[in-house]
Length: 152
Image 1 (cartoon, helix red, strand yellow):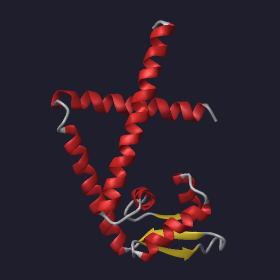
Image 2 (cartoon, helix red, strand yellow; image 1 turned 90 degrees about the vertical axis):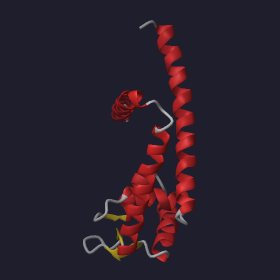
Image 3 (cartoon, one colour; image 1 turned 135 degrees about the horizontal axis):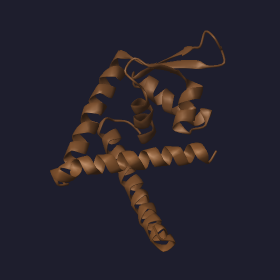
Image 4 (cartoon, one colour; image 1 turned 90 degrees about the horizontal axis):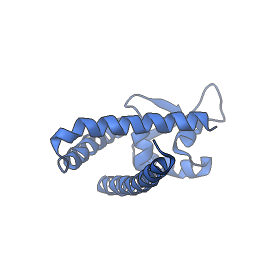
């Protein structure tokens, strides 16, 4: 591939990923609002598997939030009854966070709605293109992860 062609493709990819990220944030904000959540609460709940427990420190790292900002997010989720916090027995400076029964229910509902939204998005794309789109996005994610690993 010629250097100019690679540059032109990179410009297009940069613009597409920026616009896609913007659209994804809007999509998540709408879904969060529908369920009475802030966008940060939505992202926090989406991080959890249904039986997962995690420390507040790990969640802050995964969400790229300061401990104080995460604390406010978790306060909201605890007050809504979606999460529980307990002092970590192994390191009393940490809190262990997990979903409550009500939290498991909302995560299941979020997952159902999240899938439904993506089905609606796929309805706007020819079915013959679905597999190629998914393969292309998977390749892009793999390349992005490789770039991030190599650029530490």
